[in-house]
Length: 368
Image (cartoon, rainbow, N blue to C red; front, side):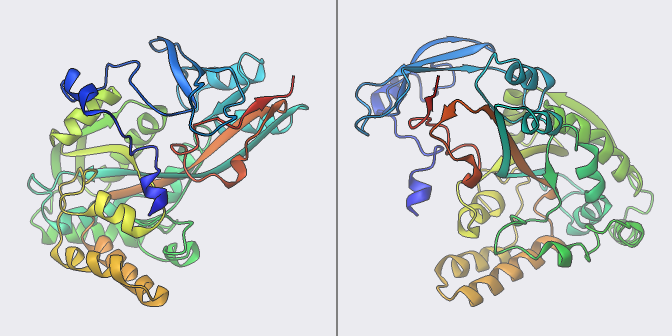
């Protein structure tokens, strides 16, 4: 609970600040905060310069006089080149090729850690025929998830998983998950079942003209054509439409899509945190507008159950619902590659979970 309260997503802002900007801080470069660094200068899409906050609540910190955050696309070659050339001291979201180079370069270190994110396709339940669980289940079965992980291996580190963090205690163990249709390397049985489901739902000839909204990022733009082909194999034909990230959030919230690919995050790995946000009927990240009354009945039970074994059984029941009535279509789960020069001290990324709560940098210092 304390971890959720302290999450980087939960920011306290003065009422006056919100009122002065019509409750939208998207274009506000500098607004009051209590972090270790204060805004100094920002050049859009280039650099954000921060200066030490002398009134930081944790006395003696931060150690650094300031920070400069340079803008690079995630997992991009220019980001890797900037680190390897010494232009920057520390890099997050490195591509796998650069990480390997970093780990083999004297005076440099790199590692990876699990990200608090699911990569997925959302299916708009407010539009027919996607309100039919059989159609969504068919689409779920169409995905060759091992192949989707493989297709981006040079871009971003991913792993196969379902609707629950695959590296958590709550998840079906990966070897067991790999036995299910939709997660197997041999997709024949899954494709056969998918076509049968579409026929039973009244679409023996498939579904045409599906609007496929794609969030503009290297991984999503790589996945989208692969997903398009996988859906085509069961008779669902899509039209790709790529938009910038800010536009994506606006259109996703407004349900202006048939299907869309992106990623969503959580603060904690516990199901009580993300089950409501991602899959709950009124969840803020439930872009599919999915609702299942059996799942809604399970939610308070999962939240209140104190016995770990009984609680895990409730989570398994929820997972079974997801498999038959998918709230989204899992694509993969993410790992994050960090790399740095060894003179960067005061950090321990080996134990990080997610990138959104490890960005204060107040204990960082440079040994040079």
